Image 1 (tube, rainbow, N blue to C red):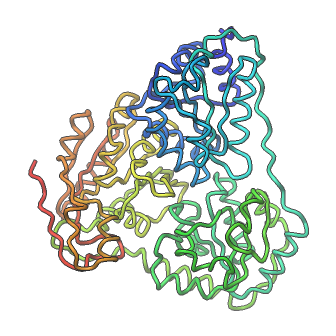
Image 2 (image 1 turned 180 degrees about the horizontal axis):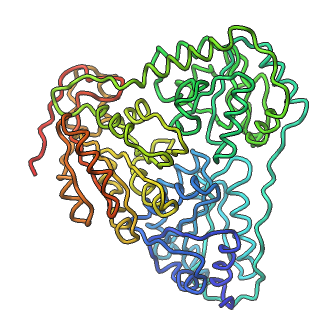
Image 3 (image 1 turned 60 degrees about the vertical axis):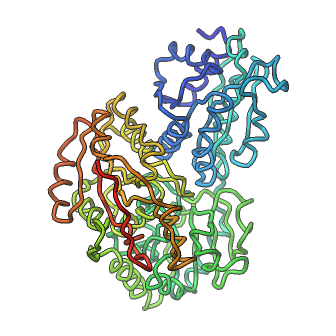
Length: 560
């Protein structure tokens, strides 16, 4: 042990707190998997697809607050993992990807499955660290973990030539390098206090740059003391308790006008721990880019991000959690008499949108009925994972998270994240209930990781919204070209997902009648010794939580 580069890398990973690596085995890094047998503190989770392994690593990092780790083989292996790396990059999720490479003597010859990873990954990673000498191994691991967490968090790739792993090494295992988080300055806090004091209707957008229950509790205390309404940003509704009186809504894609119009009355916007994107800002209209129509305070730990698209009235390059803790210790600025009414009005507006009301539809369940049923049964501390698709709008509209519940997803909207993230959550938090919401499209992209769940004894509840089509694309088509045919470009032929689940050893349930919702979900929640899949046959006509098709859709379902 420790006499090879692979042994040095394995022990370096352990020194950085790594206790779990997700992988699909490959001969290009088999030296490292062998070395990991001698480092028992690191568990190896063998997955069924590199995209699944990557999404598991992303989810693991979001739960622990440290970089998740996946390991993939060269060429096709890395190509399969690209969807998760892309998601981690856009979602600012810390991640370290260990990538096999051809032998050093063959580099540049276009050897079997060889790729130039510096080129291939340049636009979806923070850095590509290539190890060419045995003496560099532990240093490379330390650099990768530092870069993954510093500034704007994100994925870092470490490239491992196959022959290097078996090379002898006497390198010392290096300890983790401290992450330098910029602290807020006194002048910035004074300016922020003045902006809040002069605002009649301030609004705070809370993003993924603040995580962890201790930090989120500090945000709640700060919001109460300073009398501020808090919105959770796109696909991160768990960041602020939906039942808290200061909760002002979820800033999602195409926010309903009834709530967006209220937000637009604000006279100060504080983007706290949020990079700001087109989806969050309603296609760069609120706040308007590049010149916001109201004073914008942007707080993010990376100065390069502040002012890149929007010109802020105040930019603070600091750790958002440190800023909140510092502000909470200062006297709250005076607020005018109308501040409480402003907060109450926003809370009421968002509450009205999430009331359990929906229409009956002619071609299957309205998925709202299923989500509202789960909302009633979801226990405190549960972890919810959500795949990409129009079905997810029902989750973000009707699921009111609080009580330590957490939501994991690909914020950038990559399909296939739901089931792998649920597996990772079950492994990382075995005492917490895990519920995954997946569409029929995403289910067959990565639902095979149900086999990984069975192999490692993880028992998520997976709800598959089957409307027989790629719903999001159908929705876009219906908006842009109303009345035009869309079935041929979006329709799917699906299996009986309940029987599909049973083939893995999971428990399968079918839900196709609103009268069955409570009974089926109660049965699903009662089963805890194996995964449960609820096959919900939902409406295609009800295209999202906010929109029905411009004409009736009756896709013929494949008979089981």
